Image (tube, rainbow, N blue to C red; front, side, top):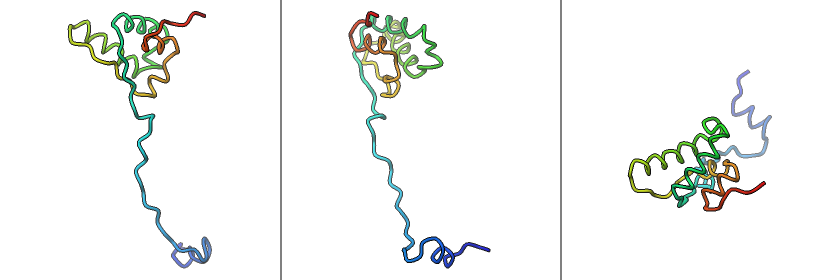
Length: 109
């Protein structure tokens, strides 16, 4: 038995008009935003050192690539700019690494 418009009208939603919901693009959320940080080269080195012991290639890939790329640019003599990380990558970083990138020292436990 084929499901036709008569079956849909009588069995699924009798008395309700069939309508289509227009597809709207999702709103731009804050999660898609990036975080811009002004970081000293010394802070980059500290952040790399702290992050290196936490398997960054597996758990913090985007942040690891961005931090090491910025450090490499500076070591190559290119002008330094702000460090840009996707919001979700920054939020996933360990607290000590975030603190260093934001200009504070690592917390003492």
